[in-house]
Length: 204
Length: 180
Image 1 (cartoon, chains in turn orange, blue):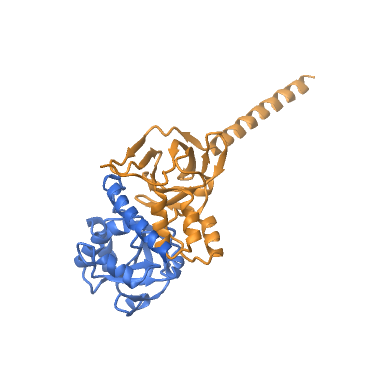
Image 2: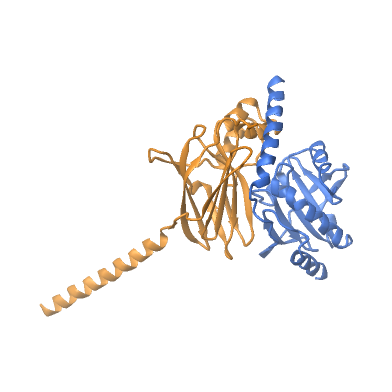
């Protein structure tokens, strides 16, 4: 009986230890959610277009509202068929700059990013590969301007390109972005981003 | 045709507006860090035409340190780093060093019009990778991306994003590679 009790206690301890280890492993694998408390929003005096800049753990993201006409101009310049020009301009497009601000290696994958609409629904951000697959079907070989799907940035590295979400003009949404710093996952949320308007009227 | 003209007008207006907007827009500072490649690999060879319709072959540059820069005229950081690339080109002896700026999917007319607007006309070689096959061989994901190739044709350093190429630390790296 004493032996049985001792064995039960040992089993309980082993179970507790196992649970603790598993719990620690699960915690370690979860991304550290970083409060994006260093968001700055800049409104251009002339155009009224907005730019959001967030400095997180080793990661800086800057999102710049782009007018549909700007998107049209870029792709028309590269001889896209008019239907494809309009399709791209129909998206909510942001000029995006990502920078490694750490002394280590910062990695990201656009496939890990989500946007959240006012109803709380989350959707994946369209990747460059998805765009290129569609462009290829339309006979387009141009493969630049979009934010690369992924990156492993060393010290001082940064990159820029377009980020696209399928939302109507002037829609507000949240962007959930994820990155890794020396292999450790992080997550940030940029709230109340707003798609650019169809056009702007310049004042007197 | 009308639609194309309309796009061009859109483009002109938009680019003017964006240029205006970007005056205040905080672009990241250009850094000067080059990442040393821990496992050096042979730089993929290429043959590309330059602005003067001459063929430039990488393998014929063995014995020189070569800075290979992938860029395009529509890419803001590419434009920002170009003056420093020209200063670097002037600073380091041409007998030991070569700058190759490989344009992506644009033509001579577009690049010629672009370089005409620069304060200093680039005197280094601008090459044309019209189907981006060379950038693919170098696994370039975004522009600008730059590689520093040693005298034996091995990739030794890499930089993703704009840089100040005539910074003393970059020049020191190039001189060290020349001395090897």
